[in-house]
Every structure is written in C-alpha cells, then in structure tokens.
Length: 132
Ligand SMILES: [Zn+2]
Image (cartoon, rainbow, N blue to C red):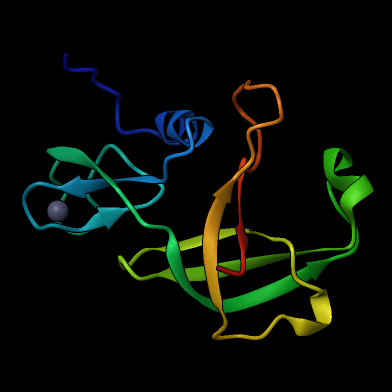
C-alpha cells in the first residue's frame, strides 16, 4: 500500500496528529526540509521523500511569551524555543514540563505529541518539546 502525502505543512501536521515528526528529504541533494516545502530551498528540486525524524536535539534559543494568541491565553506565560535537531533542521515549538527559570540554551529536548485535542487543521502546534 502506498499512501502519498503532498509535501506541504498540512501533511506535516497530519503526521504530527499521528505522533510522527516527518520531514521532506530532497532526493537530489539530501536537504531535509522541516516544515516541508514543495520546492527544495537548496537546489530547487521538487523530488522528495518523507523521512521520520527522531525529534531529539538541543535548545538554540527561546522566548517567554506573556501575551499570547487567544487560544493559548490560559497557558501564558509559556516558553517557545527553537531546537536544533540531531537530524539537522531547526524546529520551533513550545517547551513544556520544565520550569521557565530552568530553561537553558543548549539543554537537551525531545519532541512529544499532543493527542488529546481534536484534529482540525490548522492548529498550532500539536507537538511540543520536553526534557528527554
Ligand atoms: Zn535539494
């Protein structure tokens, strides 16, 4: 059975709803696009395949959000960071399960998935980071 997903952000979130962190890998130059785009940012190829990432990496930078979009107001203040994944790409996301004052640049983080919210795209974000 071969199921094809277009290389779009919508597909990316569909995988996230299944608990998978998937990137588009360029068949020509090997660049990993996360989130996926229909055209390779490096060589402009449109030939991709999906690869599943481990979702482990290190925190590059973070921001504490005090004033948040409506749907996250009950969670504020919360922390959003950019994580450099072992696989290469940088992925932004919310950081949870660690007290804000204990968050440090360079700490190990791991992607985890939220499965309790109803699936309806677009929703931001349905994955988050936590200490491994
Ligand atoms: Zn490429």
